[in-house]
Amino acid sequence: MESTKLKYSIWFKAIFFMTHVKKSYSTLELSRLLGIKRYRTVWYLSMKIRRAMAQDLLAREYFQFLYILSKENQSDYNMNSLRHKSINAIAKKQKIGRDEINLIAPAHIHQKVNAQEVQLIRKNYRCKKVLGLHNQIEIKPAYTATKPSVQIWMKKLLRNSNKLLNGIHHGVSLLHIQKYMFEFSFNYNYRYQDKFHPIIEQILT
Image (cartoon, rainbow, N blue to C red; front, side, top):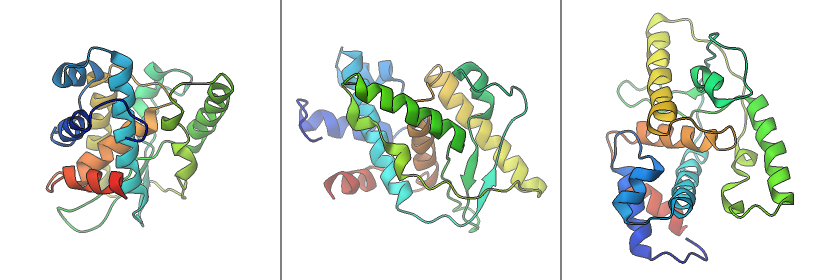
């Protein structure tokens, strides 16, 4: 919220809406809920909130990583082909009913994002505060799960995340795909808990 021209009430409403929905809100829907007509303003606001969700996830240590990669399409140069393999790294806690995840895009996507961000900074990109998130991510070794129950769980997560990226948001660019992954992970981890206060605490600290 630093250097913002929006009222704090707008920020708190946006945080409330984004943390009290089962899946996610598109930028247009969030714009209607907040009563803000300018698309870019609402998009920038929502991206900052997703960054706060990321900080909560990055502060945790996940000890088990599972690797998912769909073989439907090997091309990764556009979002339409990426949608079937958007979930690539998953961390899971073993406590039944309280499993937690942290979805991470593969390393080669982060490399592409880094190159794009360098170009945007050189061009004086206006929304610089939503860049640089990938630099805080530690890419850990991953492995493929073999247990049938775990594979079913992973496929369900893959379907749900793809619905989020390609249904609600109608496709997400590679530049920002990690932020939406963090939003999905955050909502999943806090599905039985209050999601509003962790974000407020993250913003204020």
